[in-house]
Amino acid sequence: MDVFYDHFLSRDWQTFSGIPLPEFVSEFYASFESHRADIPLDAYARLRQMQAGDWLCSYGDISGVAQALQGISSRLRRPVDLALSISVLEHDYHSLQTDFAAFFPELLTYVTPKSNATGKPGDRASLQSALPESERGFEQNDDA
Image (cartoon, rainbow, N blue to C red):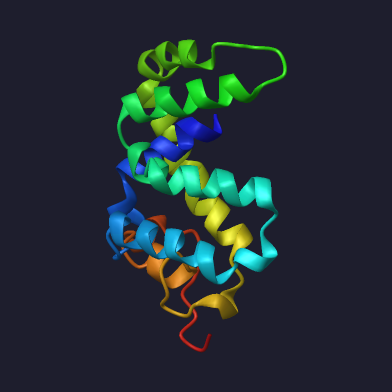
């Protein structure tokens, strides 16, 4: 489900942020170096693979989701062809999209403290600013 939701977030990014997805992702990838000392070696290697394949932007296409699921499958102790679940995504696309549209604004409200409205990519203010007021899921606090 996580990768399916990544698909909807990537595909509809402009709904949640005024910052274009490629720009946001580029800043995220650039942050790897500044946090290098804090990242375990295996995790850092995976992050570099993520950057090399531009995984985050690729999720916007179903082929990118299939590739991500195939990659996850190859890392499981017991092989499972998760890419077969693409048929579920395609069959239930509208209902999964509706679920994501309800879930993501709630997630933003839950995980982002009001004091984090810095205007930087990915924070509450920039992700929520593009949403219609009725879909924001929280009251704007200009004092934050």
